[in-house]
Image (cartoon, rainbow, N blue to C red; front, side, top):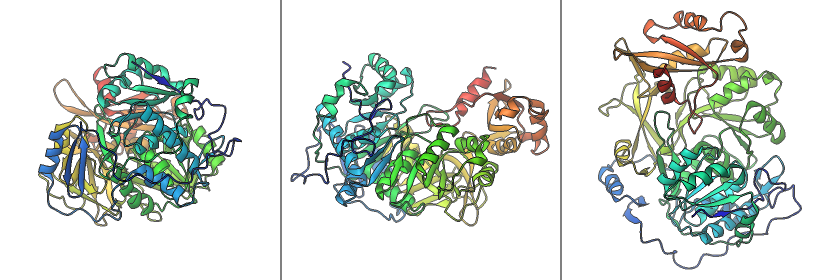
Length: 596
């Protein structure tokens, strides 16, 4: 049975601003702190498996996964962590409730186009969600889908789930019916919090699912009784720091995304190491993000990181375009822009780019996909804002390699974030020499507990304290890393290995090329050849000049690349296909080329 519960107060089509905002006459409910917790922990469900281990604690449904982790955990020492949580530990406490206890309840936590939300108001709303989810039958350690656009109810619902000990699973509200049905079946979520604007796909997916979640649909009248009439007081579940907190999803650039189980401790650790230790998040910062909150990169940079220091985050539900982003910057004057290379490209290519005032920004970050040195230079020339490229994975939650403010080296990822150790190894696990390409492995305090229902992938990717990635990189004598591509992206042509990124950067140097991706295509005789897919600028697509066609692009690479690195075919597309996280879907490019 599909149960629909609704609340319209903070939805994107709501006519009023959030409770506690500067744009409404209603004030916060006045909550300054949670009431003291009763003695003793709440009982845990008996259905889960719990295994104690020094510095580790697991609460998941697959005992074979637990035994694998224990059996493969080596005795070697992890990098020293600057933050070691003490139990009980719940990140809803750590990122939200603690700010109210510190007397920051009236500070602005969230900013929207129409108003602001204080820390006290966000806490009260999260408490209502926790009580509502509990009333809807959700129990600790069960999954709750959060499929909302970037409105204040997204963090309220997420924190509400965390407060009651549930596990947050954040999904793109624009997913189609088929993907949502797969998500329901894969996660076995007990409840899903969605908005009426996006409800049809969620509802239809639930009708076709053998295990549909209970749908809480915001933006329709009936849910007010569940959300608004729920108590604004809540005593948080006594979580352990290694309890599962949030599922992230692998990028899915070459296959179906896998659920990555991350603990409460992971989110606190990277906040200390990266947000505070590298970027220097401070109380007067205002963050603005290109990726939406369901993407772990944004969950950290535009929610957990600013809340950890008493700063504020800008949220907007609209799809992010260069025009929308420039408008948000002009209105909110953020100090930190959370960016991705695709949007960097769109911003510098905008016809009014040079007229934009980005002087409010003290820095911008870039992650999610490679940032070519040529594009980095165009950004510097256009905006003059320091752009820090870095690398993170869902398996380590967030960024663990990054450039440093004042020490940016365009075309590189920078160095390992303090608290993380990164090694580059050959196929036998031996570290490679400086300048040689090696497979990345990393360890630190944000290591995931594994992939949900993928025991074989878990055994290969998580070996003791190390996560073994498919990313191939080089490191110079100063410890600075450069990205060479995924292991399954590297191409062997005419008996020689090369990274398609080299051909992509060559194509991007051509004045009419806006985006480029190069993949390996297998021919009928079993050989692999590189083929390129490019998106042209508006002028190039309009035939401005005689150097924007395929022949001109072939001539461009012929002058600059060795013969085996040159794309055998160049396809001009209107757009590059992308995954649910906005990364170039190389698998789709390969499948499309194979069908032509």
